[in-house]
Image (cartoon, rainbow, N blue to C red; front, top):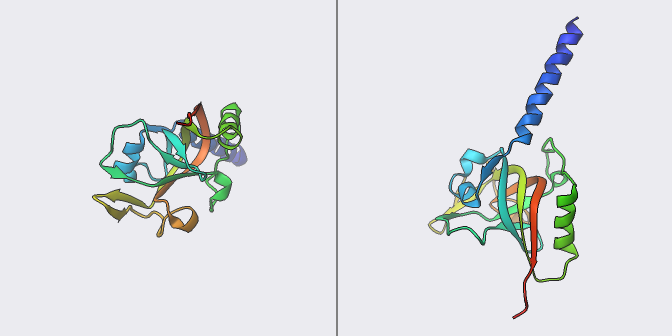
Length: 165
């Protein structure tokens, strides 16, 4: 009888954990830049443009933001300790991969990212300011990024070729 209650309790917990991941917080990049402490460690859903060869995330469609953060998107299997979720490699992810790696350049690639937000620093008034308990040096190669999104899934992929002028 005790074993049954334990199984039910665990089943209930896994349902709650699944729901938390299934309901990311909708934010803008400016929201993340201005108030990173509100979103650190949470699942977020944010629209952005991939810039560069290392999945740097930027916003070319939003109004200017008074704060800034160099943000990178990373795969969950590149994060230690493991984030507790996997990358969803569905049709949208395959569209993103195709557009990023195989489509002719230059290309404007805008999509929605869902994943866990981690932050170490934010830029305000041309000064790099530490954010809470985030990374001591930063993220990515040579710690050049202030924050990251550990990718769970992508959606709404829009790949637009940019004309050579």
